[in-house]
Length: 98
Image 1 (tube, one colour):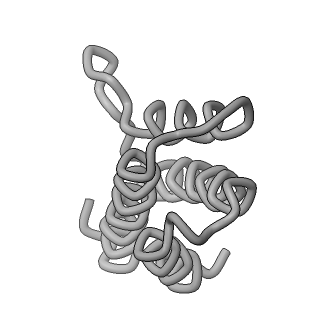
Image 2: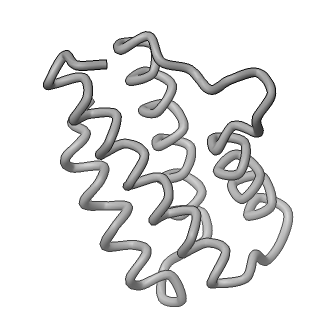
């Protein structure tokens, strides 16, 4: 997966949420969830069991988009959060310093 392209798409879409089809936002969030899990597996870093996983928030927004409207600010926040998570995890995987 090309993480740089995904980060770019997430960032661009977060800046244009109100003009973006909810199905596209959902697709991006679903791709982001896969990317985060893939990168976590690659660097063997997973969230602690006693904290809420940030990926859960992305999955919730994606599911909510499938059944109805989600406020623009929540979509924007989810897209930005996803891009930051992927960027951080990708940097760690490139540096091999976990």
